[in-house]
Length: 510
Ligand code: MSP
Image (tube, rainbow, N blue to C red; front, side, top):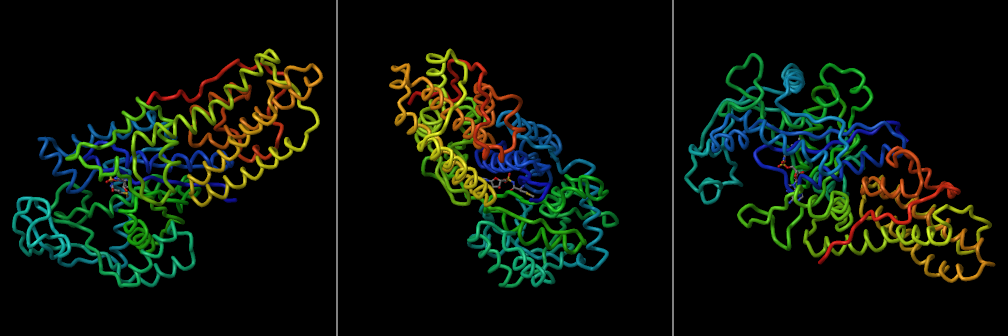
């Protein structure tokens, strides 16, 4: 196992406030970061905001603000996601910070120096009122796709990146690193795209003011995607290098939505190769959410606000739902009904109750003090064996970035523990003094199974897991425990006195 792990989210445009899509990528990255910390790896987790470019400039203008003012206002909404959603990022980068200007200009200068960036002329369909270029594919009946007014062919001087030169090196990189682009289906799409041939890419604009200037070439600003992608190296100390860069670059995984995969899997590694910096090790593209069966949009008024979700359902429940409901990588539908169902059935009934009712029995039969288990019977051994299988299933799923599978494996153990309760029937054992030792063993085993579930579910439901961890008499932070310790049955301490109940997941009234 590598001793370090570097995971990123896309950096979000500040022309809009956060919605479920932003929350989704950030939560997924957070769960990976937390899981890898619990594997004992040294983790760096970066998120941030993309503050330059036309979109931001235009939105600011519409609101009568300078772009920087707009960014300063909106960035707080993205930074606020960290506490609200229990995100454990190590840094938050804004592309308007001086460290990022230095980083982008350095990378750009290197490719300019070796001839991979050259001055040419950009030609496209221009909409004067919108101040935007469009491609042949974007215009609609010769009109601007945004405002519907006629567009005209226009040229401007522009720097180009020699992307065409990187077709072979990219294909070679994909071949040698089969896990670079995931999931597999997306990888095939990207490979086919690159095999189809690559055009050089315009990487500067003279028609836009809100961006990073190119030193020595007044009037040009760097194209927003070149600027934005570079955040991933800036965040670990590029161009100065230093300990973080040495330790964490190349990044292990860039978590992105499927719409921005091409930028990450084609352009970004090519920019880096050209500048002599190692490309990232992985990019994972997740799917998109619709809301109650419809595309999410402002005009439909169905945009899901993550802050509101947290207020209504709690951060842990929201996190759990997003990662459990839909296989990671596929599209999914968000509905309140499905969410409430998941919360009540998986979290409150299956998981929460397992602990809560066992604590109740422990209180009733043993005054809350955890008994020492005695010799294990067949059913006990089956539960122990299952806990080990679940640990390896969770690990395999997490390594493959299959959150739904990891959670479903944890719930196999939750459900098995619930079945064990029914089968062992502690309330019957409690009736006969001769069964007292067996009763103690049974309660111990249930609580130990619950402890292992808590450990394995902690990256997804960190706050509830901590609460349950403490209710089980475990010391310290569950986030600092090692997942591998789930493989050693018997970690629950005997002799400690536990509370008579602990409600980690309240039921939601339908
Ligand atoms: N600024 C660029 C990224 C630059 S990264 C170097 C950008 N920003 S964004 O704010 O528009 O969106 C970022 C993320 O939100 C993307 O990963 C995108 O896939 C995700 N989503 C936006 N809407 C979404 C859904 N409806 N569902 C799931 N994710 C969605 O792109």
